[in-house]
Length: 120
Length: 110
Image (cartoon, rainbow over all chains, first blue to last red; front, top):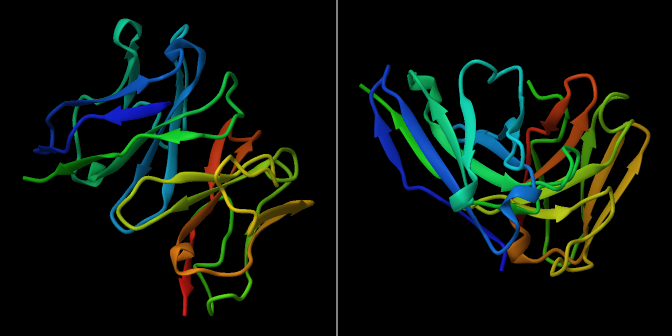
């Protein structure tokens, strides 16, 4: 069974750093793009970017370029989303999702989401 | 402000048909295919329709997708209580070099 399992909810203060994870199971992790999607409270889905664990190829949405960093540890089939300095406006649920072998493939499996709360 | 435009809400009685529109442009829907996701309250989105009109395994054939020019539609026939959910369209945008989503449509079963 293909599934993505994300790390648990986090609470941080503005200015703090954070790294959340997304572990893939049931498929060859390095062969599929991973998408990151933000959902702010009560709002819709926003595409943040794509990461290819096979060669670390990355595409960021212009809205998130320079604000976040994608990475992965292939040895444990885990992708990461990290912030170096959080803002209150980063409060949201963050989803990882599996794409395909190319950037244009739909997202066929989603993680359960990680709630990030940034508050002083 | 989203790149793809969806109506914020739609509704219908059980058994009726509901159609959700998704309007884009020549750089996204007009150039590629449309994907639809369903998101129940408090849960992660789930793939509902891809390549305009293809249903993943397990999605009932009550759901249908279509596309014409720079617009797409998701149809739900024989509306059931479990169809009450948020629905999002998405497409790759060649100008932005990335995925774009619609703002989502909340479907209510009356």
